[in-house]
Length: 304
Image (cartoon, rainbow, N blue to C red; front, side, top):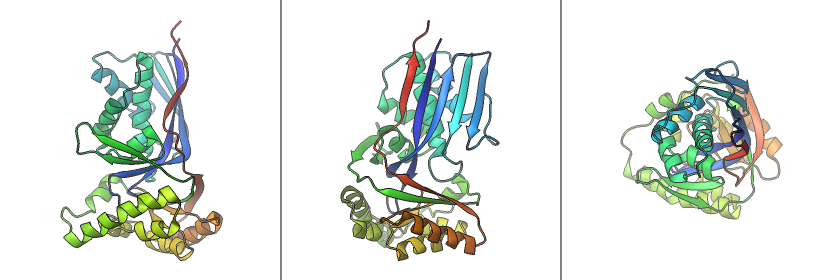
């Protein structure tokens, strides 16, 4: 019998100016159990996405699982039971699709009993996702810098303080495609320079825990001004956090907004949720820790 579980954390990407190159791991996890209880490929989903996610081989986890077997030149097993216990909300900007993709790849690798090759894992995840920042952070843990236009991809783990992150998710649908399409194909040189100067400030602010650097650095002119127009109340939510001294930004493509609390995370979260409420939107909030722990496979048993 083959039986094991894969744990993959939530992630937040971009962090303001680090568009498609910065990612950070949050202590919120999807835990997925795999076993060779057939027949066929069956998926059960508990928690986030239980009413929406596919429960057959079209599920993203199952598809990533089969892609990895194809990459290795082997046929995927047909007696597969996948039980998903999800805590990462769907369509939130917290890396739920990257988590699913990574889960399937890691499970397939474990099923084959092979040592994990992070380079190949991230390459396949990037091909399936179209960007590598969330997957790289989820795989390595902590704060990462990733260059996805290189072959192989270049991933650099960076030091980070154990800070608290406030996450507020408004009840608004925003597809990744719509968020991508909102960004112009060409940008002004001054806007590119604006982001270039602030990205290292974010990195140093997270390394040192310097909120002054984070507040100054987590501003952006390349993607947030265009995406914020698609999310009622998001601009005011970010400003509400900043008014309380908490650096804030969109989480990935949104619609979640993140802020780094300064010993008053509850107050920051309430102010952000009030801003969304003023815009006519309900929201959910979390206060999460940054984690340096990346994805892992545990409780694996060999065939008997």
